Structure formats: structure tokens, C-alpha cells
Amino acid sequence: EHAVWESNGPMGAVRRAPGTLKVYYVVVGAFSAAYLAGAQITWGPGPLHISENDDLVNQQRLHDLLQRAYYSPHRPGGQHSLLQSIRAEVAEFRERAFQGTPALALAVSMAKYYFAWYQDGGSEMDTESVEDAANLMYASIQFSGCNRGDLSLEAFLQRMCNARWPFAVMLYSELGREFASRYL
Image (tube, rainbow, N blue to C red):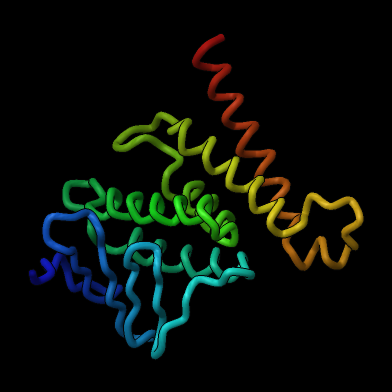
């Protein structure tokens, strides 16, 4: 079967496999081709797979790709046509984060923070997504060793622990505030 071409905008050509939500991005310009396919990213002139060790690199790569898709001009009638596909891709990466690739926890947590804070088409917090983002952020704290009391200040800063901990606290805090406003 051939892909269904959705658009050919500034981010490059966007295509969708027939009968699926999975979106494949072909980016022209800085990269010769970039595909997001089933939790496997290949970048640039040659394949560069998800890092098993460097969660900061994974976070940057996934964020850059999702940001290009999100800020593309695909908003007929004010509704973002790629949002469901973006969420489906994030869900696939989430599964990998919990099934043997903990170096994806930071990337998925931040993707949920940026792209899945609210329920579809509304202004109400998606509490399941925010809770998942908080749990993934804590998993990234554990993966990076930011929870170790013997970590030197230099290592603490290099591993971005100074950003991970406040994000975890903020995510859990906002989730608690949302629950309090709904149920108290």
C-alpha cells in the first residue's frame, strides 16, 4: 500500500500510512530525511538510533521532531490535525520507556508535558497524562542517578538533576491541585 500524503509544508512532506494514525515525517533541509516510525527514529544522512544511555540526547531529539510536527500549519478550523498522531507516537515511546529503554523516560515525560497537558479539544487537564508525565520524570531521576545522595554537585548539574527534580515536583503539585479543585 502507498502512503497517503497529507501536506507538503515548511517542515517538509508529511505522510500517513493508510488506515493508521502513525505519521511518518520526511523533513527536507537540515536533515536529508527523518522518519518517526514505531518508536524508532532515524535521523539525517544515516541512521542514528535512540540512545540506550543518554536520555538528554533522546529528549532533545524527540522534542525537536514533535515540535516541528506540532507547529506545522496543519490546523484546519483551529483543530490541530496531527495532534492525535503525535499522541499516538508519544504513547509508543512511553511503552518503550517502561519496557527496557529507561533512557526514554525523560523524553516521554517532557513530550507529555508539552503536548498532552490538556484533554483533546478542551481546557481541562488530562490528569492521566500529567500523572504519567510525573511518574516518567521520577523514572528519569532514577535512571540518571539524580536520586543518589552521594552525587557530586558537578555530576548533579551535568545530569540536569537541577531541572528534573523541580519538574517532578511541579507535575505532582499541579496534579494535586487539580484533584483538590475537582473533588474537595
